[in-house]
Length: 214
Image 1 (cartoon, one colour):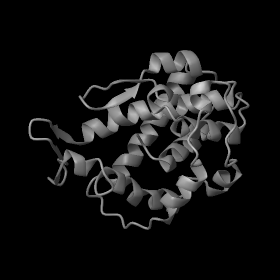
Image 2 (cartoon, one colour):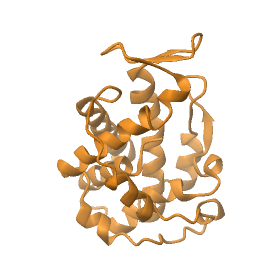
Image 3 (cartoon, rainbow, N blue to C red):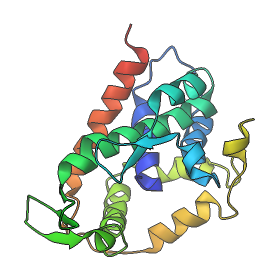
Image 4 (tube, helix red, strand yellow):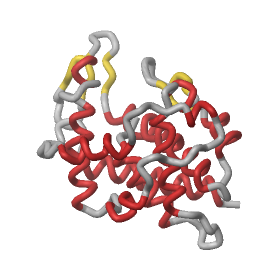
């Protein structure tokens, strides 16, 4: 569910904290982090199962780990990294961050008491617009390496897995260019930048500890 710049910033942080003994090609790893969202069949490419709150879906991490946890393969490991963030961003940040009033079909931000009906929250006037606000801050603070992004090929390598190689026509680079072009001012009404980034950093260290601690 996080946007493309969030996955790139997460991958950048993960790569910085990989064990020095793991000689992993960075560009291939970053490319792997982009691949799951390009698949035509997002249900299969994200190994979807019900999350802890009705209406949300998260990757089945047992199945993901079985198929994609290959630290010596930068593409597959990058794909694993992408799905790891999807799972824990939803379960450990997005769901706890709000009050989900299913009875009245409302989403409430307990920090400022703003509320939205469900369709508005999951729209460009809501959550997705808030992602756009924070995109500019991720770039401003160097949390996304635009130099690295420029080195990732527009047409990403195939994985040898049909579900991931059957991709939509729109490339990740076109999508990214559109996001960057949106100069939306930061309000913090939905997502607080510091809280969101702190959550991503926690997930980075959780990922590293789970992946490499003996």
